[in-house]
Length: 267
Image (tube, one colour):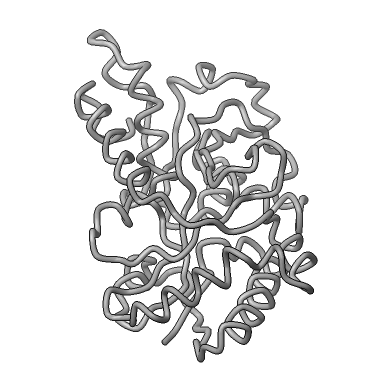
């Protein structure tokens, strides 16, 4: 079995912190799971398609659409705004030099988006933006640039002034703020989407159910076990919980809402 924490390897220090946590988890659960490097520009969908994938983060919308991936556990971020729940949102970021302080001020400018299979980088912001569409204004922005491929590539495009606004995963951004705050220097959040279920840890359909059960039991009790507090703190987690599969199915409703508003793409 293999794993990767690619989704939340926001910066090198975060990647090391995730590895330290999961090495402890796998050892505690008595499982042999190997870490693999799966980096940009390899499509993250290729990672999720690996038949021996186990205990890797998967975006909630592709998880709901797959119908076959096995849910293991969902992370509960520790920053207060998550309110002790396995949730996250998308943050709309702009350059501070723009002077903008609201999402509406970005309209008529250039938006960059990450990937069409991303909840935080496409589906959630698309549904949020769809509420601003009218028959007189079917387009919100002057240009829509994507797919940019990864959160860091989206941040690069914003910094290099190739786009004027991007929407990115709040937990990814909080990991950046925790480990390398300079990555977000000069950028400002002007709006957030509503909360939705956070990306969860999954296993491929062929992974034994006994492995999934062992991991779920170990992860959901890790916060009660000795030695885990600093490991969880280093990845900004309060604990892991058993995922509510039905809540992820509701993410498809955001896609239907946008389509119903005639806003099937970010534009």
